[in-house]
Amino acid sequence: QVQLVESGGGLVQAGGSLRLSCQASGSIRSINRMGWYRQAPGKQRELVATITTGGTTDYADSVKGRFTISRDNAKNAAYLQMNSLKPEDTAVYYCNAEIRTWVTGNYWGQGTQVTVSS
Image (cartoon, rainbow, N blue to C red; front, side, top):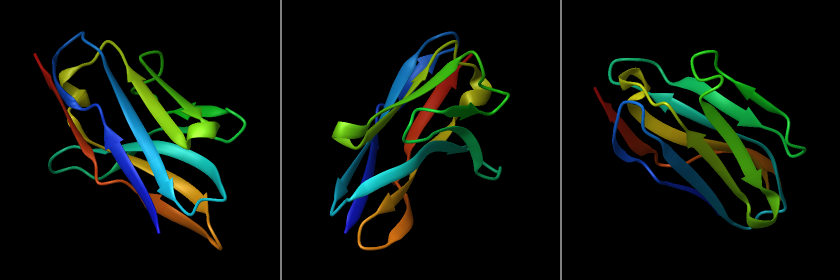
């Protein structure tokens, strides 16, 4: 069994910062791509940022220059540093990872709420 657990969400004023963490646990052999997605009320889930095992990153245009994704391969963890937050960043943020156990599967965390007040 594999679990992804996010933490670090909360309420912050516009212009503030938050750091999200994602911890993977279970019978993990390796983790390939890790990413953060978000879903605002009434909207579809969207990609925020991804990072490969080697550290190559990709970002949605809406967060470029404000958010930074990173990972710690030794800890099976990923992080999302969010700066200069805007009210439109308000959403539930989900961690996603491609994880190899005996087979390779795509896993999601339960989500963490981020609310940015104006």
